[in-house]
Image (cartoon, one colour):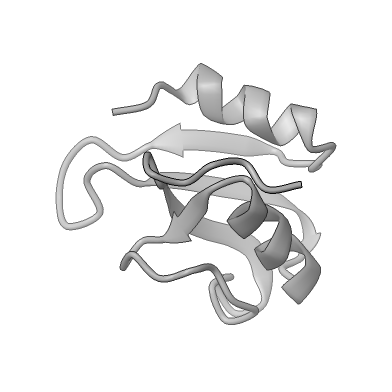
Length: 86
């Protein structure tokens, strides 16, 4: 399991503005991170998260529908097999 500091470092390196990153350690979303940020979740953010190697909580690439009711509030998992895309 990746630690929260590594997730924060990835987001900072990609210049993604966020408010909070929280690891979920129990329940059905165990192994996910909840990332919240200012503003709305957009397809551009989804593409940035995918390029960083993140996938949605269900294992699929993040989409414009990954945000909670359009807000920047997503549950993502790091994809250990993914290589950083440029």
